[in-house]
Image (cartoon, rainbow, N blue to C red; front, side):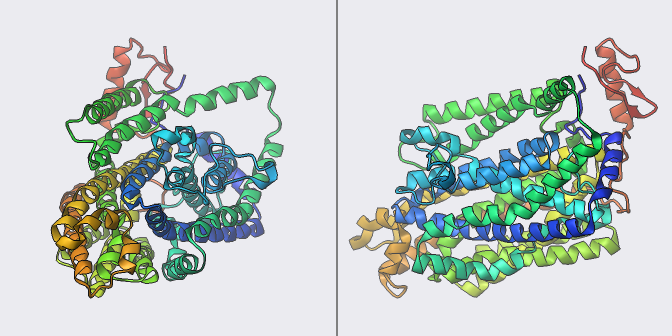
Length: 626
């Protein structure tokens, strides 16, 4: 059975992809593009309002302290979702993957399925939940006494993450007139190197509008309805606006089946068996377990009943370590089609890009998970203003990324923009250390942070993809995104630990003696308490000092992580971009890879053509297991 680096794309696949793409009419492609833009608008609006609704919901249930746990498990889900989504789309098809993502997204929000006799299932959670625990299930937290809902933990994030990934796939296909549901390619593997940055940012363009609209939307639902309606409306909007995409993919798949003819029952069974093998279920599950066991304890230690010396914390960390060792061993030595192509980390652009993604998302998530709460409580901003302030980053980063995409197309270099972006990010975090409650100053720092991210994010991803062959683009992109979101998970864990540990301590330290007893109430529901205590009161100023002290600690940690980020950028290559899709050709191997594969073939006692790991004329042979 064939063993590869994690991708199933071969030279014949490329030919088939080129052949099948020519049957799509211009009208169909235009309809698909409009559908993508509409769906991207809705999902981006959701992502820009969900954090506000989450904070409001936790406060309504007197459980704002649970935000740390919700953020961590949400980030872990985003991290581990990338490989399985890429595999499902790669193996079963774009249509099947899209429908699955839409279903899981809606299932994470809805209370009932009206057209299925109002049957309540464990996966149908809960815009209208009566408690924070059910709300948290929708946002990926399950307390012990609600374990029967554990099947719904990852649904919402899995759905929205998958839709965002598949939107990038289709945008790339429209650009190159190469939309195919039967071949293996991922978000930007059909675009030329010099156009890659520009077309990768297209699904994010709705952020330019929603930066300003999101504040009005949140204010509307918060003041006139409530956060439940704000969440529930997306369960209608997303399926509605996804219909053009689903219809296009369905018609495309049916046309391909008619052209290729019907396969025999034996052929279908063989294909189904091959699809299961390509999913690398064991590797994916092991990755999920290892990351969860590592990250979740970081937020548990912030609670009174847990400490670093607690047996359960030590047990979880040790278990995570052993699962991680097993995962690395499995992926490197035994997996026929690895979920993450770890061998490709030997390239310094690949490894450097993964480090950049990890550290940048670590710093951003650590601070931004509590940015809305800080702006409302410490700065005294309204709901609308706080939402807009938090979205300045999205607005500026998309604008700058579009400009960088145009510039890269002419300059044909990536590293200069990466270095500029890293310098902006480091400077922004450093300046934020000295900020307190000046809203204008904070917004300017967010602007600088967005400029840095716009210069750095897509250029780094393109640099990583340019360093590998076309066959490995899908796998290397999934691995890069996994490590990037893993950085977000670790950042959420560290931020949650800092927040849940120091906020109660600082509140008791700064509050007047008459208000010390209210520290727990303030921590659990700061928004309601702040509405009853104006900024001019002594007790409110004490709360401002407490929140400012804790936020400063979090920003210092984020700034510290931005220094090695700059070093990682400097270690990456600076390739000259061409009109090719990759700098490294299909089947091309380096001298070191040739020697290592020949050595491995000798160890297996098989150095004949077609044997395990044999290389002929610089081309990988079919590597068959014994």
